[in-house]
Length: 386
Ligand code: SAH
Ligand code: SF4
Image (cartoon, rainbow, N blue to C red; front, top):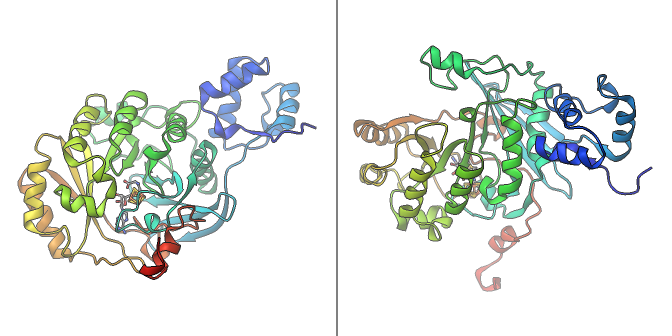
């Protein structure tokens, strides 16, 4: 028996597994074989990998494991949205949400236990930050959801058919239960860059999930240097959490703006589009009653994004206890959107899904041991804070 902890093979992308296998004296095709068993078949038992040499299986059983986080709660919303609470150890838990729609199924994946960026309206941010998720914990969410949903086998390139039919990517069922992945769960994906990019590579790789770049979306609050790195290392669809039309307001709602203000963020979006798989950036904009939702804000936004090919996704604010914000009325959201649409910007309003199981955007709370002790600071009286 090996005394060191077994290596979790879910931590490797294909190149990483090939290199690790090389260290065992095993050929690259063996690594790819095991990769397919793990990710395409959802297999976590080396004995079941029937076309892998018996001696290799025996060796792997001794030194390796295939381990995704364990689900500790599984909730299904009346609208079919399904949320899993996953144990990631040391009393931390993160959430993964599956959103079924007529022509696609989207998995919303978490990247961190908590989040350090502290956006004013976000339940995850209110919990403070504990730690980055490992590659196995990130890709393990897709691995597990596929398994628990009884997913269809991955089939090859759907994009060609879509293009031929003149369809927007993502608008046609590609025969998979999980057709799209969005990094919009708990945490800021670009603050856990290396692990997120390795997990993205697995999502895209034909030996693993084989999703097209346009069906994998990273959502960021706007960490400018990391947007540039993503463009260079693994360009996928990009969503940017804008939420404000000027720096003074955004400094308050999305504090990372104090470091990377709007002018720099807009320039980073333009640079990203040079290599992006889609020819627009999606701007997410949470609708907060009386805060960022006036006609004047909408007009200011139109001017702000003038040089960035983009679509807008308006997100009705999802409340959580002690949030301190209210959702804009449906009529206000409609009129705000109409100003953007009149200016020629494609604008959609996000349907709130899974609200009855607290699975809607910004409601993911999981369970985080707050290393930044933010929750304690917030509970104390002001004179006690130092
Ligand atoms: N950290 C990343 C991704 C996770 S949050 C980011 O900030 O982009 C996914 C989206 O939900 C972001 O646009 C975020 O701003 C938004 N969001 C956060 N709290 C929300 C709430 N209470 N109601 C609606 N949307 C919220
Ligand atoms: Fe973090 Fe995103 Fe929430 Fe901001 S909105 S606190 S970046 S998870």
